[in-house]
Image 1 (cartoon, rainbow, N blue to C red):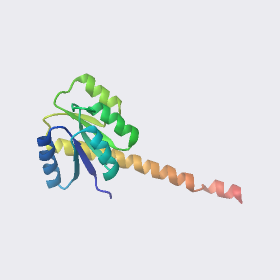
Image 2: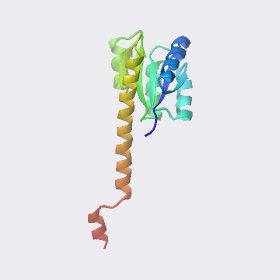
Image 3: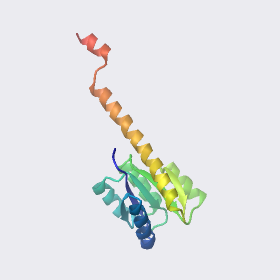
Image 4: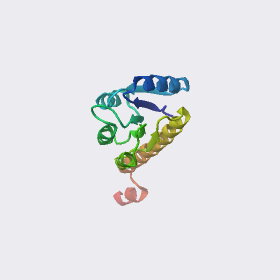
Length: 148
């Protein structure tokens, strides 16, 4: 079974470093980025499965980054994270494809739980894609009989 690769995206360096250390201690593979454009580049290079994404960032904010992640990498699951949440930004994020929305400060175990849930969702989607591709390649018994 493939191991989940997570990415933390936040402009607060202290939060990134501390959270990454805690997740690595618990056995997770974690990449960090401090802004949206950097996150998109690293997703491409590191084959990230789950992104924990801060909403409020300078430059490309979290919602813009989320939309671009979903456009370029539709199977990547994104969990929005903010200390400045409004119901409007939460709804925007969920409409744009975020798996969930968490408020800072958030317990590391909650981040892990949500990341695991979103990774399971992704694995389910990947399995459906594999099955659909196999059905396309393989012929059904009735198709084989019709051909003979």
